[in-house]
Length: 333
Image (tube, rainbow, N blue to C red; front, side, top):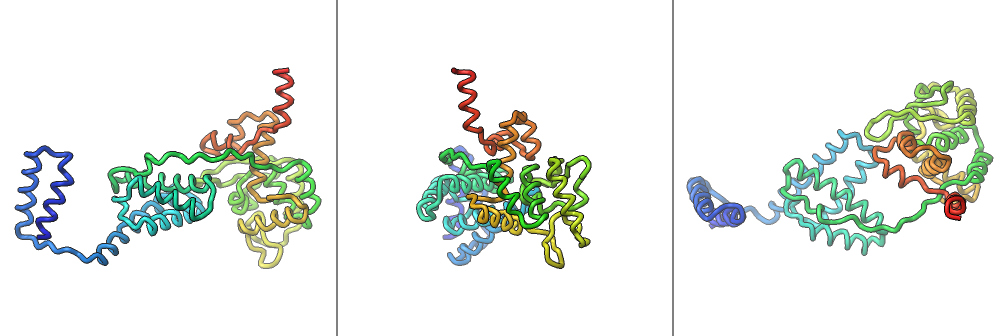
């Protein structure tokens, strides 16, 4: 009985592709090859275990591919968590997940998680990347996310630091290391992950530049101003340890500062100066905005920030509203 069911299922699935004569020929081939084969049905429990194993193998293969591409550990962890939650919730073999399944999942995620549209669209983008990869690798026939369109999000003008904010934080720095940290973040616009990976040898003090390792393990040269050079020299001259890292903890054994360590430094500065939403990435956004505001060509800002797409640079940069007002009076009247 099971043998006949298998033959019937195969011929039904091929009905839309093959002609009647071809279907009949396929059926005869299956009957002939199954003649001496014993086919038994597996239990639902075993089937579930097998499906989960296959799903996990696909997920792990995708994660490995992303690691090879040079994605950061934080990105890899995010991808993994998002995909695992989806697989548990939908509870289907990846080959059978439909567009409707994805839409329902995203809708429920938004309702249950009380999250905004930007978060939901980020999840959609992870799914799109995952299923596109599965399709390209021939693990699935069709990408179910292809017809799940970008979720509209509100355009929010994100804050940047004012000159006054920067001066307040400079005055509030209790040691030369913290001052060097914020000066380098503000002057170069580098990512916090790039900052903590810097070694002393990566600096070219005389040329006021340093080599950073960005996303995708791509190196680029960034530049800092004279003020930053002075504070970096003061900090380096105050060091009495042998650690190769540029920024280290103040207490022995003077270990390399982590991302969370930098975040804590700038967060404390925000609290002590009463400046809202102080975090490392805000320095990067401020640098992009100031550079464009002062006339630096967007293509050069893109190279400075290490963006692959210029659209990403435009997303970071916020046009100064006061300059819009001045330009309107100049050109419109």
